[in-house]
Image 1 (cartoon, rainbow, N blue to C red):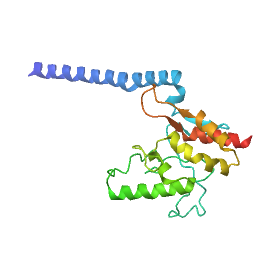
Image 2: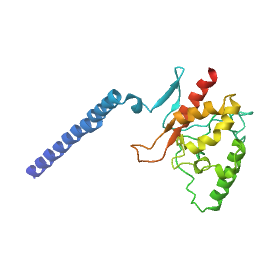
Image 3: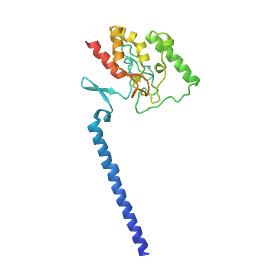
Length: 211
């Protein structure tokens, strides 16, 4: 009986020691080491790829945001925000670009609700940018899987050039030059599609209007 209790005691004590050691290693030492490496070698990415302008944080390269006109009645929750014609607009977001509420609408491609939403959005985008509906690309009327995609296609940026140039008293050539400059190719040369970070593009546009 005493031997059984003694053996059980040793096993429990060994298990507790192992638990303590693994807690320190995996819960303290490892996270600190990884954090140190990340901060030392990839400081920008480790801190969320934040974008600064004039010394202030204005967003993240990884999270899209809305570029709307100020609401006429800020306290009115039912007022629909209107896109600001001065800025390049992002793709639609099911969550309003809330990083705490990511996710798509989960509607299937043939769902009548989604089909109607896409058709309505295509009309609005075409009218807003003064182009035929046939020129409106898919990403202009459909959200991403995460709902916070910060990028748009070069095609979507291109149909916005005329409207952005007019609203900012710039030439279309000036704006097209910005679009070309901020167009990024496929990752590693073959992954994904060419894309443009809307935040970076709009910040460059803002700088251009100040010259």
